[in-house]
Length: 172
Image (cartoon, rainbow, N blue to C red; front, side, top):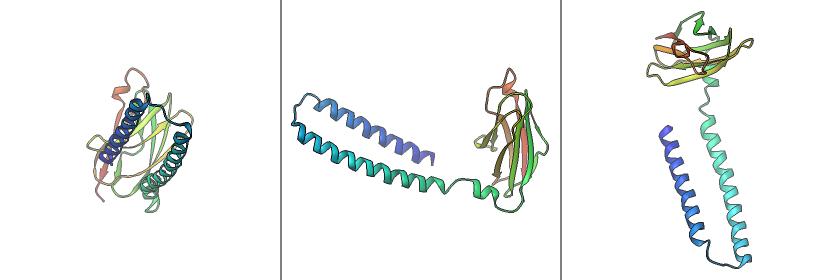
């Protein structure tokens, strides 16, 4: 998906650069106002519908992969209460089963923290904000076993870099 996003971005940037180049090259030529106005309205109408159709296609393609349905499937979830402190995570459970939904109830005892879960390859798989006086609920289903790390994503003080906890995801 990242590779596709890169190619789409590259094509869009090249197209925009081509338009700017064409406008810059033709800026010195004089044309009849009515001719230019009619052509501009046709281009604007075509661009509007292209954006609408493209937006619908992008929404349909990306909304199918939202994790909410997968995380809530499979009955009652495993629950982990997580509290952020300066500068450690307090997890009431650190062993879960792969393929079963996990519900993280995340809060903070002092300042705002970012609760980020990283897979064994250190790619972020889920995140939520940890705030004092409020419990955020994060639902996630771990697909594969391994040691996952919980790291703070928001600078919270001098020992922020050491704020790491581990969750062991076991095979079913």
